[in-house]
Amino acid sequence: MKHQHFFAGCLAIAATALGIGSTGAQDTIKIGLVMPMTGTVGAAGQEVAAAIKLYMAQHGDTVAGKKIEILLRDDGSVPDNGKRLAQELIVNDHVAILGAGTTPSAMSMAPIATEAKVPTVVMISGTSVVTERSPYYVRTCFTLGQHSGIIADWAIKDGSRKAVSVLSDWAPGAEAGKVFEQHFTAGGGQLFETLKVPLANPDFAPFLQRARDLKPDTLFVFVPAGQAGAFAKQFAERGLDKSGIKLVGPGDIVDDNDLNGTGDSLVGVVTAGFYSAAHPSQLNKDYVAAYAKATGGKRANFISVGGYDGMHLIYEALKKTGGSADADKLLAAMKGMSWESPRGPVSIDPATRDIVQNVYIRKVEKKDGEPWAVEFAAFEAVKDPLHPAVK
Ligand code: PHB
Image 1: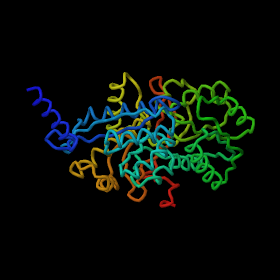
Image 2: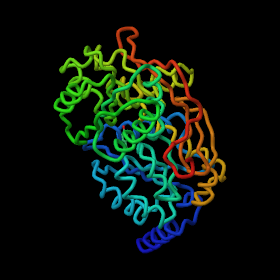
Image 3: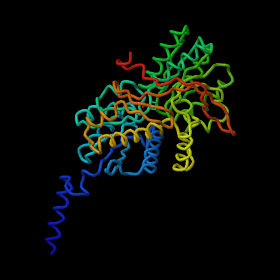
């Protein structure tokens, strides 16, 4: 009797390993997420994870007859961990799809995704070059280039001529600065200096002092998700909010997750961004309400939307392939896909596998006592300007 049980058990394990049987492995699609859940950009990974959980609560955990299983791994905001974790997820856990987070981690994972042919949805990284690192990479978030040229053009139109850039010193900061400078100087402006602030535990004060001493009329700033609050505090402490120097930047500097805690210090600041919690569509109002309910009252921010839409892309692609997780079929299904996101209409550029989306010009205004980035102009279907295929 005992032996029979043991034998039956062995068969069941073997059958599962081979994907045989009605509840076998082929009925489950595993998605491995490599996100910064702790460390320098830890808030971002948590926002993506919360949005994915929300998407699955709203849409169910079965799509095209397949059960979706999420395997979430924390890269600790350390680039090389991304590579190791992706490898483990593929080799040991047999994930069919990966989700990638920030630029350094996504860069380190790219050769692994390519070699194993694993479709990977990039949900946080804003650096153009990332999607060129693997033919299996598709981005649902944003690029800094998408926003930095538009805000430069807006600043020129608004009378800015003398700018100083203050940039977080890593790849997305470099791209933001490069595109801002191209557009600002092409418009007749002058960039006095580019100041680079360390990514980890930044002290903005000396850079803000230096920027002020250069007497620009405009400050172009990029700090990543999760640093807007600390930046706003030091900006106000040095009296820059009342100095007459215009502060502009990509939407990261008015991250909705931090904005609510910045009081009056960012009121009037104009940014170019793809997402504001104040975006007036019904879909977004519902998203903001559902996200707040699911997270104990947090405001949905631009990072969360990259995760929410990443999950949407995976679900819709699986519907198109009839539940097949074959890499080439999934990639074909994802390329050219368009949908209505909480941010507005979006699509995946079939040539670059990058997100095409509206970029809005927004001004921080107080409504019911809270600061919000209120949209007042829109540029439609904006592509990343740095991809060779786009130039
Ligand atoms: C990135 O990983 O490229 C990144 C992360 C957070 C941001 C912007 C860019 O706010």
